[in-house]
Image (tube, rainbow, N blue to C red; front, side, top):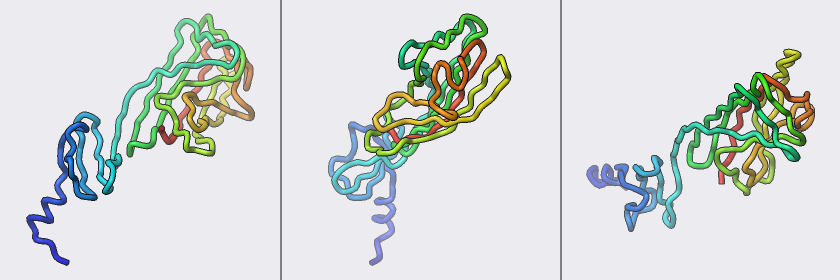
Length: 185
């Protein structure tokens, strides 16, 4: 079937609006750009679905521990950044460096806050990379970062779970870095 050119072009236009002013009776397949959410959404015949969304922002991660939270000490550094893409995925990376004085490892397994809660639909762990450095010995070890379904924090592992005393007792100028992509709620 052949469509008349003006009608065909009209159906292919991307409508610019806000999430509160979407067309009320859209045809299936309509694509719009929402200026208030910075995302493209498409109508599937019954609901609007996020088609494309990319948001990049900074995030200040917080390092906690299962029993006693660590103290990062004077001169510590905490940075994080994330990008949300396609409205469902978050790429998150960051670094935590203990200060040059006054650091205390705390006790128990370490957890790092994530910028957006992970989906609870995931039945498996979502994994990424990690790198850790013991400043006093110069030892660098690679590991993994991982997030469980519905989680608000990520965990780390080298040869075992990263804790206040594993892979070493965390102290002044030691650091942790990670990168992970996970599905968001």
